[in-house]
Length: 424
Image 1 (spheres, one colour):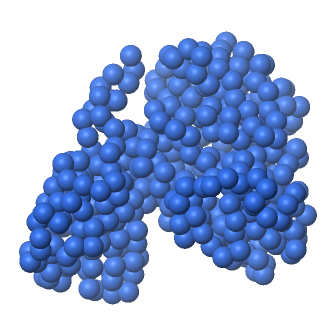
Image 2 (cartoon, rainbow, N blue to C red; image 1 turned 180 degrees about the vertical axis):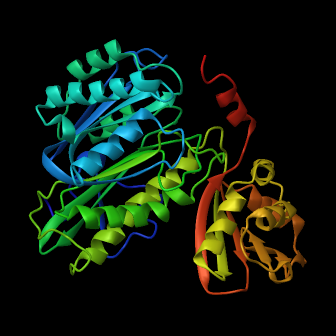
């Protein structure tokens, strides 16, 4: 494998290279960019749109260190419950995951768990691996039993290969308008290491300690406890800071597999290259997280909210997330309306410690609020800033040293259209 990217990387969107860490390079391949992984998809009729891929599989050549974060919903899907159980029983090891789209396998009682286990067993038989090492994910409509005849057919016919990353990304999406994938490489102990991922999600997005569905692979060797620590931290500052509609999913899952094929000394918190690995992982998770509200159901604008000088990290996060999670502000965005009163209202109900009389707010770099009252600004310029494809909202609390960023989108009629007929 080449140590450069010129052989296999075309021009990438600027978004992929934004804030790319030093020593980290972009490559192609998604979840199969890392050595030792194969993936693929198939169409077996789970989705109502016949012929669309609706079952995907990712498998490593050997047992991996593995980590996961999951929804904190009290109505979690059967697949989430099963994956938590498996990662705990194996001490943070796994070798494969099988994913179906079009059916959430949630709220199906005891049968739902039986179907999730059966799905895992069928995939294990297909791949020739231990069933305890095969994880399962589902996404789609809640409350409908998984069509196991179709699942069995799909697992029997699916083919996986070392260039199947793009196919895997296609097989996991539901209302997404495009796949969301990225891969990078860097050097540890003189060895080239790769890390890649794919995610899906466009609606029902406001995660807590999880994400929509996301799968990340690396050929680095890493200790399971360290891997879990790194994933939890990366998720908290990426997927946990995005919002489309303020709704947490029952199926939210992030899984990270480390094959160890690169041959480095297994990473832990004291490893000299731990910081480089973490920076690469965080670049991947933040890129994938931002792609979700960019592709939000019916969305026409993407917003980045930055809250500065908060008294605590928690205050900064609460304030930033409250703005992305305000439907009335999202509607203002849809109409290019610089109605900063909506932002003030969101901040006031956020639960963050703040002083109304110290607040500064800027929209697209234009200061619209100074010390809690309207600043003198050009209304037309502010409206033009709100009409851009990307809208920047900057809030300065003037109370401390902490900063947080959150990402979201506007709320349009397209969101209603998408969700008014979802189960038809």
